[in-house]
Length: 46
Image (cartoon, rainbow, N blue to C red):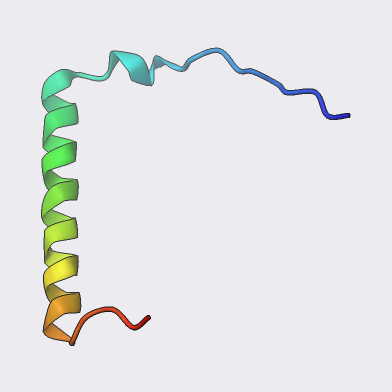
């Protein structure tokens, strides 16, 4: 049987809220561009 190892939370919880918002905004923009590019190529292949 395996034993789970639980690590304490890291300091990333104290990330600056403005920095976090900027990061989320950049991620959202990148995803939007990626999906636009996929759509322009005819969508995802299933």
